[in-house]
Image (cartoon, rainbow, N blue to C red; front, side):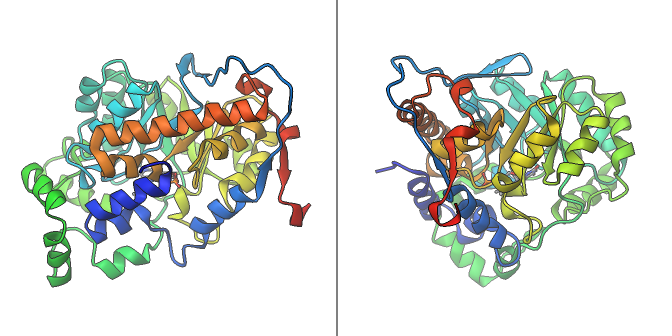
Length: 382
Ligand code: FNR
C-alpha cells in the first residue's frame, strides 16, 4: 500500500539503480542538514482549535495572480530524465493535473518549450543557474519568457556544489563511465535500464542549444560539476531584472539579512531553502529560520519554503508561520520514480488530501485561519 512518502520512496528504491536512488536521496557530507530538516519539522507541533465550522475546507492559495489548489509546488530538480524518460514532462503534467505549479530546473533533460507544449495551461516557473557565458543564461530567460513561464527562480545557494559523498562512493559522474559495480546495479534494475536505453543518456538540453559544440560541452561539464559563475553578486540582479520583467524569486536564502537585501534589490519573492540538505551541511533547517525571515520581510513579498517537507502537516506548519507555500523536491520525484506521471500525481494528491484533513482537524476552514498561535515547540524544549 502506498500511504505515505516513505512508501513512494520504497517503491522508488526498488525501481531505480542504487546510484540514481542515492543521487536523489542523498545530502551533503554527513547528511546532518538533511536530518535536521526532518527533526526540526517534527519538533514543531500544531495545536488545533475545536468547535469551528469546517464543513467546507478551502485549501487554495493565490500566488502572483494564479490560484494553486494547495499551498504546494514542485521544486526544481536537475536530472529528472535519469529517474524516468521524459521525467520533467511527466512531473509538469502531474503538477498541472493537481492544480499545482511546476518549477523546471536549468539542469533539466527536457527542452523548456517541450515542457510547455506538454502542459499548455500549467503554472510553470523557470529555475536559473548562471554559469559560463552570461549569454547562456540570457538565452534561457528569453526562451522561458517566450514559452510563457510565469516566474524566474534564481538559485543562490550553489556557488559550488556541496560534496555528496554517496555520489562519490557510487562513482556517479559524467561523462558516464560505468564500472563493474554500476553495471551490476544496472543489470539488477532491468525496467529502468530498458527505459534509459530507449531514451538515450539524458543531457542538459536547455544549455546545449545556445552555444557552439565546444562551448556547449564545456557548459554541460560545468553544470555537472555545478561550476557556477561566482562573480554573481547582489549587483548582478539588475542585469537579470533588465532581462525579465515578471516575478523574480531568490531560492536558497537562509539569512534574514539577505532577505532584507533581496527586498532592497526589488525581488518579488523568496524561497527559504537549504537545497534539501545537499549544499552546506552545517546550515540550519529551513523551518528554523523561516519565522525570522518572514519577520524581516513583513509581508512585502510572498515567502516560500522547501527542504524536508513530506506531509500535509509539514506544509501547514510553514503556512502557520506565515509562508505562502512550500515546494516539494524528493516527495514528487519518489512519486515519479514509483509510477511515472500517475505516480507523481498520486504523490501530490496524497499531500493535498493530508492538507485538507489536517486543516479540518485544526479547525481551520481556510489557510488564512492558520497562524503562529497554533504552533508550539516540542514539550521538552518549551
Ligand atoms: C535538487 N534541487 C535543485 N534546486 C535547484 O534550484 N536546481 C536544481 O537543479 C536542483 N536539483 C536537485 C536535484 C535533486 C536530486 C534534489 C533532491 C534536489 C533542490 C530542490 O529544488 C529543493 O530545494 C529540495 O529538493 C527540497 O528538499 P526536499 O523536498 O527534497 O527535502
